[in-house]
Length: 609
Ligand code: ADP
Ligand code: MG
Image (cartoon, rainbow, N blue to C red; front, side):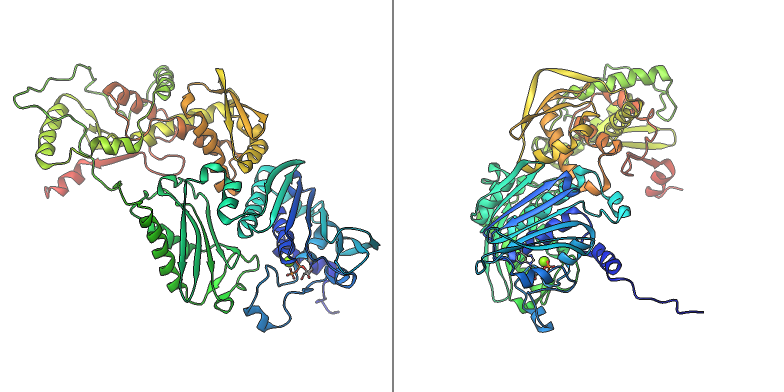
């Protein structure tokens, strides 16, 4: 038998290696933008078509390449940036592996035009699938203009693997923003399908952030400043009240390079600890400068992870710098999220008799019994009405209840409560839970999760039946968005429309909303679109294009929140509807909606057998 092992042909090896460097259009965008920055350009233009799947072009006015360099730049391990392993520990360029252009040429149709200041003529090279098709002198401006078409044209399996245009565009915008934030001294533009998405003239860090994320960021930013022997810190954090429920804008840069670092992220979180609730995320733009030899940027091929020589000290410095800035701008803790709220029963005045409530409740009512379909329909109709009512915000609730916690009042409340409960088998606790008893124990229902699940299941059903009812608005609403949100929403327009939101492009970063899903509160409309985009930006890979995630986001906006007072018939209605749901005990995200305390457990807590 002959030899089984053979060396792979060069173009196959290149294709395989390319898979590591270029995973999707945004990885090519990153590599090309970084090359332009490394070439010392002061102006860089990015042009995208079809989410980068059909075209990615980067034009820079950097130093360009001479004919010899242009001829070798597409070979694997061709780099002008390092010469020996020693150089690896003193890197001041973005690239150093010499793999990007070789990878791009292996999996796309590439056209390169480049010229240096010293030469009369430039050179144009066309290369596809690692094969040079043409190579000739041309006249062109100083700098580099590189254009790649039909990414993965020769690797259909990978091309099919690409996500929707909305998802791929989102990743491209992410990369663009990271590089633009790291280099405010460079003028960047970005065009997507011929629309100018960003035009960012050279600016200060602060101005760059505002140009990308919108004018409203101006008043939200709190500056950071610290200089120690191991690191210099600058940048901005966002005031705690602008923290988001999703990850928000979290950017770390080290020596002008965007990095991901969960350890340092933890340091920032720690500094905000008393100021934001557990489910919120602080936003920040933090720039660290460290000596080059104390940083290893070699640990990950896609290069967003780095290793610090002394990461514990850097953690401590980040923590104290952020804390200091929060303190300096007198942003001190004012809300205590762990605070126990008192029972929501008004204290009795001395001598006042307890009146039984006037609402009649069926004493034999058992929420675990299935309800008939007629009742089911009525209950669903009721819940539609409930969505329209305004909800009380979390903060308001805290303020209202914070002065009711002293012991004697608590005792009074407790007496009132037991007596009321004598007449009434259902009551609200902490404006958050519905409590009711059964012969086998006590059940607690989370009102927000319960209603969220009810509205979610109903919406999902409507999506599946393709019977979404839209209610037209008397006065269409206009919604102005930031550049990147507007661009993303255009990509998502079709999917958003399918949910019953009648929405259109109005031009000029503005969307117009003509109708909403039936029963949806118009005041929540702006927030809803923001939620959909936010959710999309941070879960793009899990896909919101599937109906479930969209239904989840919409129903979250529209549902009854914690903090809202419910009367007995509302609670009754809610319980009825909950038990019509396919999943009354656990919500779509697997979190419990109902908790049951069994009689046995209660007895054993009292040490009774
Ligand atoms: P690396 O950036 O890791 O060196 P690349 O494959 O990205 O590897 O690029 C190879 C070489 O091509 C670079 O080292 C640089 O000399 C040259 N090059 C690439 N893009 C540009 C550009 N836009 N302007 C000038 N030179 C460039
Ligand atoms: Mg490079």
